[in-house]
Amino acid sequence: MSDPQHETALAGLAGQTNTDGLAIEMSEITGRGMIDLRGNLADRKFSQAAKKVLGVDLPKAPRTSASKGDLVVLRLSVDQWLITCAGGKTAKLLDDLNKVLVGVHSLAVDLSDARAIIRLKGNGVREIVMKGAPVDMLAPEMIKGAVRRLRFGELAAMVHIVDDRPDTFDLYVFRSYADFAWDWLAQTAAKPAAVRLFGRQDSPAV
Amino acid sequence: MLVIKCPVCGVEGEEGDFHAGGQAHIARPASSNPENISDIEQSDYLFMRHNPKGLHFERWRCDRGCGKWFHAARDTVTLEFKGYYAINELPPVELMEQAKGYWAEHFASAIKSSKRPKS
Image (cartoon, rainbow over all chains, first blue to last red; front, side, top):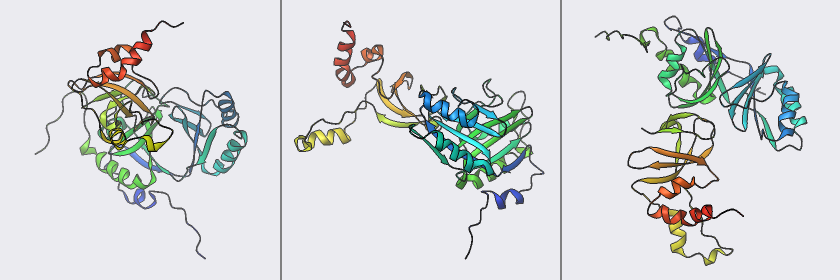
């Protein structure tokens, strides 16, 4: 009998790419567990049950996140959160959530394999993301912990600002689009492709 | 290009981040017995849409943001968005009063009931 083999979305591609000529560091984040949680935050039973298991309040303000240790809660919508944790802890966390949410109108599902995460690090990450998305990544709200769902090079994607000193972004895309996003970034992040947003732009070499 | 602001999550973006849902406030012909609905009424409900010059009321979805539907009032001449309101609401009274033609008729009773002093 053949056993199922788990491959990460970018298992082949990420290793093959020559990253020497890139302006930023790019890598695939693997081994993260992701749980999609939906519910009504106005329902105290729901918010308290979630807090009991997660250890943090579900972030309420738009485009924010909360974290405790290795566990990160990203706010996707008014009634939707993405909980990411170390892969090995996913099953237990999901089990705990489902136990405390019995009888509460809500949903918690393991979506660990639905999305791929590409980590972008270094100066110029914001400019590169802005090449693919009509979003002002230099806005004051784009600080550490911010979460922004966006249209990224025609994909539905999400950016989580893990750190802003230096800029470290996690780009979440659906798994089946991961290779497109990776290729797009590998070309767009090349050093000669850098754009300067402020000041004089060099004329292109003809 | 349209610049749209989602009233649910507050995100502002261009039209590619949103999904147009067509004309707002379309009511299905009500009847306890579907046989009573004439073919004309049913086809009007399904297919006939208004395309006014000026103020128009539309449904939009915050497609690449919070994923929620909302209503918007847009001027089809200037492409300016005049206001946003929740998916389960009627427009603010001042916008209903600015409406002309089909929309003025559509909102006439709603304007009247909003003017009635609350007892």
